Length: 481
Image 1 (tube, rainbow, N blue to C red):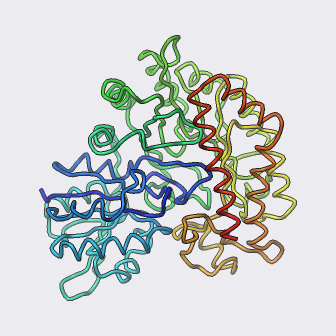
Image 2: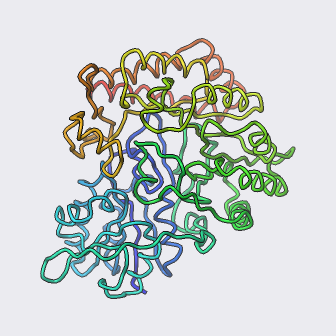
């Protein structure tokens, strides 16, 4: 085996660009997702190491020595971080000219040849699901024999090998939590709506929904939801309980775990057998959910210890939901939210401004919709046309933006990329701040937050920190504008 290092490179301070973050950017409060897409192949390559530099506040100087005795680096990149990542690749090659550098991620899958042309230090890029591709590279197989890569030949030409098949049996993949324990510090990972410290991992990949803006299903994960058997998921949960006792919450990060009703019900019942959802058992779990999960499924999830759902509402306007192929009705989402609240489930709602069909009126409709639904916390993002998505193609064809990869400011904050004849990007950008202020600066929401702080000293410290970060976020946005 080649001595292999899996790397999320140093980046903007507070920038969450890891292989697991769906939106690569600095958020309104400090947030870091686990780099699961890097941890997975790291678990399959003997003697490997995983470095997640942004989450661990590591600079190039902190990690430079790690490349002195390595043969292979698997470097994750994204559209917003690509410029910084290729600079890191160049530094690695300067330090160790003999090292082989492979880039992974949706960015290089969609723009494989363009990515190689942008940086001579990168030897190849991995496309599709790259778990077994990384294994083949670590074994030292000839590049010509490895499916799913685009590589630079000795004469400088770029060669594109045949596609790699999807992983069909998810049970074949090993657990990622042992890699977290070995190489990462769980205390470094935060979510504004999650108990701290938490652990997240995928029980499956793919999403049957066709949302036009969503990156992973349209590039690497696909639209066929493949998931691990419940016994395999329980095996990893047991590992976390036994070996990571500091963890207070587990987040199953599948795009929409609750879409597979029978599967999530079976999982919930098995988790309850471990103690989840029972009196005196302090560890909880959460997952992503589409806002159409039936009441009886939600009830089983709650009984099995589910505490929090991350729900992509996106917009309160039905026409916009149709435009982005969300496959969701506003009235169904309202009933889902009522059901979840009646069961005591916490909801983190995500919304997007600037999607096709957006107007000042639809923005107002969405803000009022969010206030009506009243999720525990919200995230408001700007529509981001990532290469490889239908939204990107649509935006370029309609001249809604210039097709550039510049989705963030130099400080890591989101830029409003899409601009319409009737609604400018500057207006859309400003409306995000208005959305946040009108949502959180309400007597009802302020009372909820203060009451939570008064009851829990740890939460008091956390919310005060997040408050400072939130106002700093608003300040940075004004500077970016």
